[in-house]
Image (tube, rainbow, N blue to C red; front, side):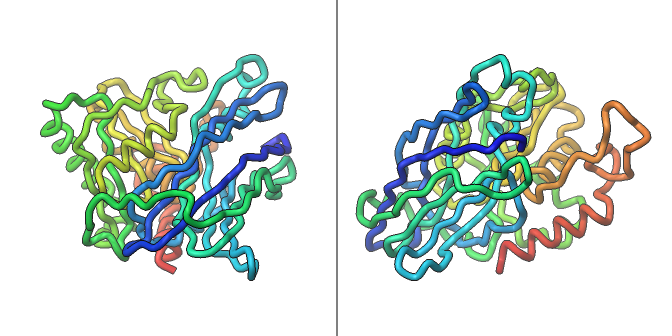
Amino acid sequence: MKKIFSIFVALLIGCGAYAQKDCIRADYSVTLTDGKPEVTFSGFEADGLWSGLNMATSDGVFRFVLTDKKTGKTVYSYSFNSLFGEWCDTDLAKTEKKVFLEAVRFPRPKKNSVAELFMKNASGEYEKIFEKEVCPDSLEVKLTRKVKGYKHKINIAVVPEGYDKDEMADFLSDADRLTNAISEYEPFKTYKKKFCFRMVLKPCSSGFSYYTFGMERYLMTDNFQAVCKAASEGGFPWDFVIVLVNNQQYGGGGIYNFYASVSAKNQSAKEILVHEFGHSFANLADEYDEYDQTKVTDCMMCRLDRDYCPVCKENIKNVIKKLFK
């Protein structure tokens, strides 16, 4: 990240008595103006059950930290990237103004806490971009129903984008085919029982489109809030999101601890999803160079007709292990 940002967003989060730990989502909009972000905090939403996983598995552009106000002890932390973070480094951001609807999700704290969000500066160091006290009892708990089988699992919500109500059977077929493809690759195959894919059986429209940042195959949306809401419509806890777009044109995208998307009807959809899931799940980088093909490596993160290389396999394995610490 080339710029140092200073964004202050007011956060007021509540907690109360509850039988099962729930999740809170803080929504905010952000845009870049004259090289500086402008943020508008939208509010808080109860976001269903919290799965209990440790999401602090890798360093991203952003880091969220929740600390106990009295003791200063870290209650929860995780790191992520975002589409806005990518936008800041594009040439388009210098001439165009674009609004991104983004969010952070975290478990409801039990005591008064402090919420802080950090963003990497030009030197690669994290700098605080907002801080606010977390106070109890300001937001009601909304646990719609009891859910079993999510503990000690990596819970992934699979969202239907562009499928009509009468196309849910088609969506289920696509979802089974594509999520099963992930477990065909190591080390996902070895850890298959650790993953729980649940399909959201409600149509959604989160604004996915091609030509994100001018790249034809980059199939993304600037409305992450809508993605979160769609994933939570399933009524089950989730840690990661996969969005299946009902389209045949080649495309997809993946951002670490944000979401992965794929054009479900494309003939290469399986390989695309495995590649993009590598980005969103394990923070793997692309290993190809569009301008210098001599730099390509023998890896799924470079060519779709390959397996993951030993380095990427080890990174994925380490993420899986860290999730359960």
